[in-house]
Length: 366
Image 1 (cartoon, rainbow, N blue to C red):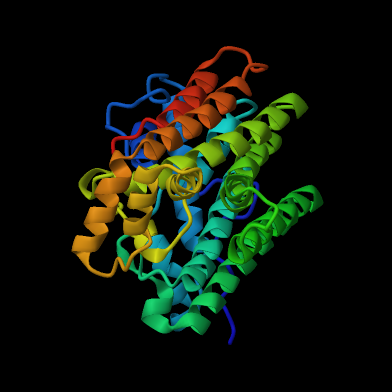
Image 2 (image 1 turned 45 degrees about the horizontal axis):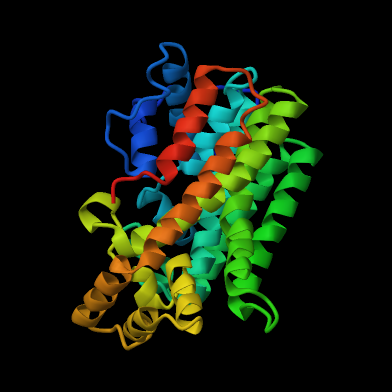
């Protein structure tokens, strides 16, 4: 099988303007399921167009980067890109770049790298979780089988690796360490906590590796390739780690509190698939400590949830139990820690946008 010459724009060149993403406001709103009026970036007459234009370039290069001359490889690689997505990681890369010289070509390419890496892991995650849907569409393994889905993920990661190699050895090292953490997170989730390990602490370490590591890398690369300086790079690394954990914890709660029409996620999806989430872990902890109401809800959660009626009953019971509010509170603590990590940065529209982003992570419409 021979691929056509990759058609993405090499580092150092700007692609033609693209209409895929019209405004930074829309990008932020879509990423976090926020109202269209959320506009900490677009309020700034200079920063808004800068971020919007950069995100459009990312989208254009992303689609070019996965292109294959082989029709089957092309179709499988495009599957999730065509389904859409939040593009949170590229967004943070572009925002972090505003701390330096803005979205120069290397920053845009780094944003494509982090999104490709994320997409590659989704193909593999869906196989391991036997997930039937992703972004409202059948998962790749449901369409083509497990082997093809795994290989499609590998193809996408290969393209990410090629792109990051063009950015230099430091970027390659960052990418390799990030991918190691992604794999370790999946491994630790698969084997579960040790007998002497607290399940909640184990889970937090899992999502730090599986989710937060790549979000942290996104901010790190954006600051680094924009020439923002060592302090800004370190701030974005810490911020990304903490806001990434907050984001995943909020997603956990949305699984039991969200309305599909607003969040795009059917309530109880994680419960039905047996995915461990913070509300359930807290529920088990409360039941083990003698909370009778927690034990009653846990019985519903751990029952056969095949039917929609059983799932709805479990979701309703878990939503009403205090552990769900506690999970929200823990997510908020991580978001607050992310905001605090921005303290060394001077006051600016960018800092305001990053602060608003962390707040929005745990204040989404659900």
